[in-house]
Length: 89
View 1 (cartoon, rainbow, N blue to C red):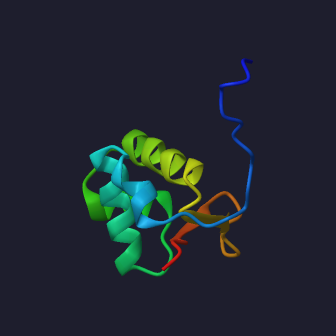
View 2: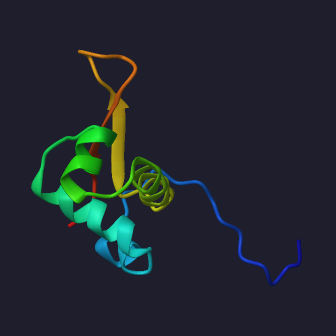
């Protein structure tokens, strides 16, 4: 690593809409759907957006990299995760 290369530190800070701006359209769509719905599973997001499950999974991973979503296990079905938008105002 060169000295001119910036260090990316892992932080738990929430992301902003500016972080979402440069993401692919699928990630922006998922973020908007999560903005209008409290929490959703991956399947619910796929049904709402009409995107394939694989694309939704990719979009959720990109949003997670930008720290703009929160995910947790579902109490009713531990195999599923619930996603919600966690964007700093």
